[in-house]
Length: 309
Ligand SMILES: CC(C)(COP(=O)(O)OP(=O)(O)OC[C@H]1O[C@@H](n2cnc3c(N)ncnc32)[C@H](O)[C@@H]1OP(=O)(O)O)[C@@H](O)C(=O)NCCC(=O)NCCS
Image 1 (tube, rainbow, N blue to C red):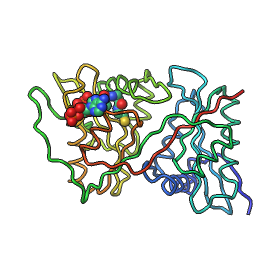
Image 2: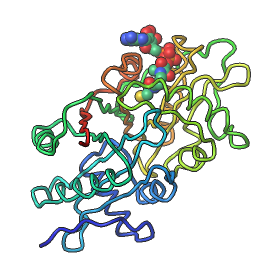
Image 3: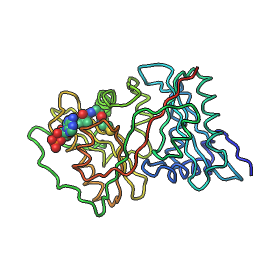
Image 4: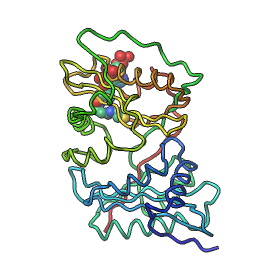
């Protein structure tokens, strides 16, 4: 059968479900649902030139690629392409076709440097290297067994600190946007990100279909959120942290730990059984927090980079 590559149609359920299924089978540590696939495509910023590509064989989605410019980076011309093929449908040319379509699109919209995540396995690394990519920074996925794992007990809340959920900010989420913007720009990694557009943040992050407002926790001092941990759920039993951060002036006081452990205790009480998180391998404080919470490294991805001539 012939494999073809085409754009995902956001209003076609078989496309969004097929995309989510491929991502789940190839990389189960990041949550994808049909709704989140549709949301990412339909709410992306126009300057990102975002495309979701699918590889289809005999009516079945066997590969998926997310392709965009890093429009919110401080450096122009950087593009992302992340390509996944169902593990039981490799060696049919889907990866090669997706990579070619993604690279052509990124070059056409002005990318000069391409970034891709590669799961740390010899065949995946070889695929990236054959396509002219060189190795960059590693990052880890970590897993916590919420049903049977050893989540530490809740620590004391320090004086002057209150805990709130994201739902408590429903009338005015801007303070959470400001905290997200301050902390995301300090996250270690290859691409420096800067959030400046509140309306885009509302669309993409605040209204993200996987965001769980009652499980997303903020530590608040003098009425202002200063540390937070953002919870996504897949609507069933899986939980994932989309971001944890502490405002610069409040770091080193246990507040990121506090926000995240409260979120995890609530998640466990709500019946969630498995929690995932991901960290740049050089993010020592965040890895220290996650190990203290009981997470264990379950997989490693490596960023690969290619300069376009
Ligand atoms: C990572 C971050 C959230 C930590 O926030 P914080 O409120 O300072 O964290 P806490 O005080 O709750 O806990 C930090 C822990 O890391 C440890 N730590 C700090 N620096 C460390 C280092 N260089 N190496 C190892 N451990 C370190 C601390 O000792 C502390 O553990 P302890 O309480 O057992 O001593 C904060 O630095 C931040 O916002 N960074 C930018 C955004 C980011 O990278 N977020 C994570 C995205 S995956």
